Image 1 (cartoon, rainbow, N blue to C red):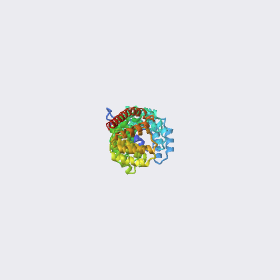
Image 2 (cartoon, one colour):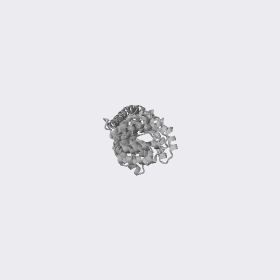
Image 3 (tube, rainbow, N blue to C red):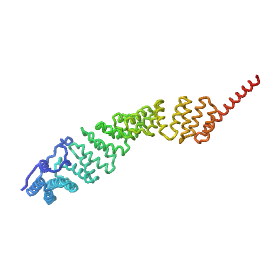
Image 4 (cartoon, rainbow, N blue to C red):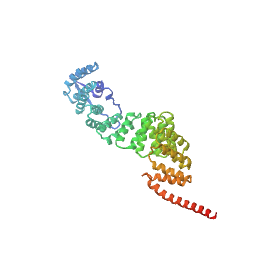
Length: 430
């Protein structure tokens, strides 16, 4: 005697214990011309075994349920084999035995006796199981088959599973469209999906897609500082320095840049883009807020910003602090150079002489050259010549000092000769 059941209702009734792994939305079959109707026949004995196995599963007697179903997994009609293996796969899945669950589901599919909706769901489940068990190539094939043959809409999660498997096989170019498809299908895009898109896009050096993913991440999680920093870096890779700077500046305004390296990075960008006042203001406020130490390195950078911004009073104050702090004369040299650029010759001469006295200079020849300029500005040609005679002894200033020294010495000799002639003329008249 045989019992006749509508397989859809029976499969649904027996589908227990599968957990979230097997959760697939039930959509209308929009792509299919007609709903498939299949009736299957199950013998009394087979039905009894399946029912008993389901009872065991409900009582957590999983090992016994598996043993019962395994005994008849290859017996009976194709419909019976399909249904028994279907439930055997569920039983294995309840104890996380995914390799055996996948094998049972593949057998259930192979007999081609289950209704279309169950086949689609099962094909999707098989693809998931293969990927969960690191059988990525099999998982890719199973999911691609599922997507190609599905009548019901493919859920976004299926595209993510496929993208994961493709990524594991370093098939990045194929993985990206799958993530985009999942994002397009979802009203609420998951942060993890966008992170996947970012990682793959960056791996492919597709900076435009990387930036797009980061913009979506920032929109979703605006208070996550890392995304702002990454967006700035990606924009730099795209040679869009202005936008990169704008992003970092926004991050700084929101207090996302806390680490000294991050603040100095923004400072460097400001200086690179010739915005020294912003660079100086950034360092000044960071040091005032104790986010940066007021050490020699940071104060030196601050002085450079103020000098370039022509904020002379601020530059002067910073350099005087540095000059007292340092055991080298370079900061006195910077002060002397700054004063010289503004034709404050006496102040320039004073600072340059302090620099030479303190010593430890990176470019002493340049200091002597600057001192010569200060003397010349004070109309002290002899002092200028004396300084040039020192400058000519250094490799970095020898050529320039020599040219100027020859010209200035000639001028000085002419001046002295003219003075001697005037003096002689005065004596002759007397």
